Image 1 (cartoon, rainbow, N blue to C red):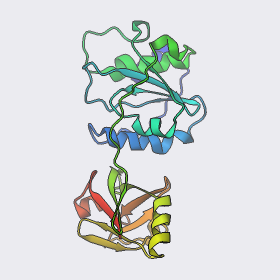
Image 2: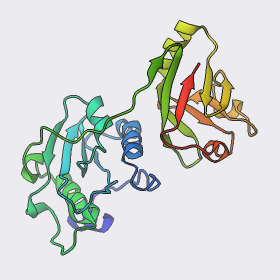
Image 3: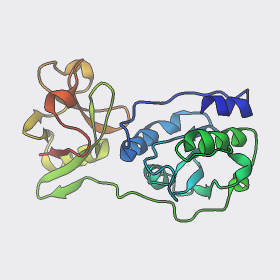
Length: 242
């Protein structure tokens, strides 16, 4: 993909965000993209490819939002982005002029998404790539729910350190504290953590701890160890505030 981009625009600056998204985990990719795109300069083109449906009839998308562009498959990967950026404009990438001619259909990252990003970086208007799209695929996104006196969320991402990142936000933790008092217990599986700590250094290597991470999400971790391995849990696991 990098070779294709540089062949079209030799002055392109390419930054790798991650090659460690779990295979086929569209939800994890969507969360990761949501967490980082705002920290890049205006005009950045983000190419996101987690594409288990490659070679099917699923569309290729170009999105303009938040003074940036996003390119990738129409499989729900951009759900979080589209929910966060309500004024986003979306086009389908289907113009043969801006893709590679190939005999296969297994590597759209190289053949479709990379060329589109490169041509876009050279000033080709988004509308030249294909028609406007008004119905991009959106996944059903799990949101934390109240059940009696509990707030129940889920793990939506596991980073390379084995930290378990939930969909419970800092704001929801504050609201829970206001409703229930200052002490919050965090439960995952059969393990219960008494309240939150303020940083990784305040955690333990022996027992998991919880904190609010720099993306504003409730996270469960072990100091210098993998909480995912220790607890034997992953994406989709239920997390409770009680």
